[in-house]
Length: 141
Image 1 (cartoon, rainbow, N blue to C red):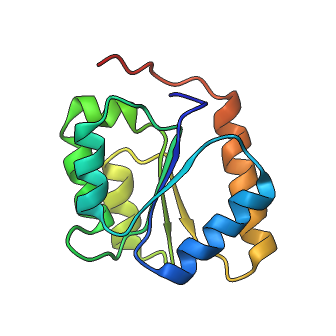
Image 2: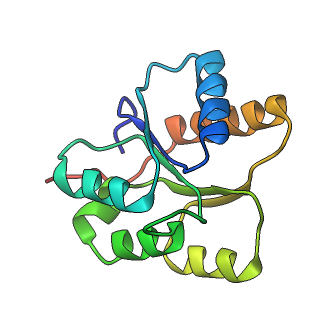
């Protein structure tokens, strides 16, 4: 894990992107924030770059390639899988089938997006601070 790497947010809803952007501005981390509108664009980026992100946050219901399908393709590719730890789902609902499928693909967290800005900010702060202290595999290209 590259603690100075980008925070990748895969989210197709522009309003949610705006809220995530505002939260991270207030949290004032030094990490670059990169948004992808769908899973396919994120997958293409992860395949083509040697840069290791710090954290990947992914929605589940997205066009082109759902979050679950994206995670499945990442999970099956060791190079991408190792450089995307931690990989967390942030979605509007916690359907148990999605939760089970996500954890079967070794995600490191599954969260329901709160509607309250301050609650989202608290959750994201806790997640980022946890992973800043955590040790994970070192990605070597």
